Length: 50
Image (spheres, rainbow, N blue to C red):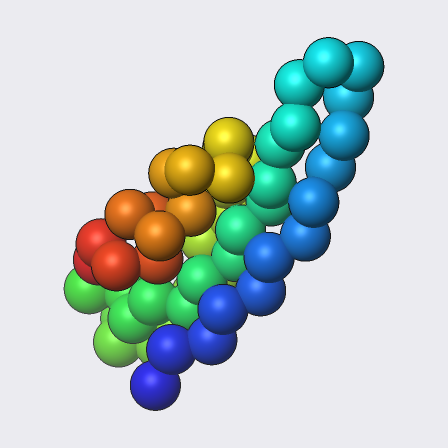
């Protein structure tokens, strides 16, 4: 099960997006949240990768 949360952040001339995805931890097997701030073009690649 994947959860996708995307918010838009504008700082000056740059347009950034904060993406949050839920991934399974290889160590404990529990789900953890991974957050990253990036450009909107990079969001789909971030969501698709494990």
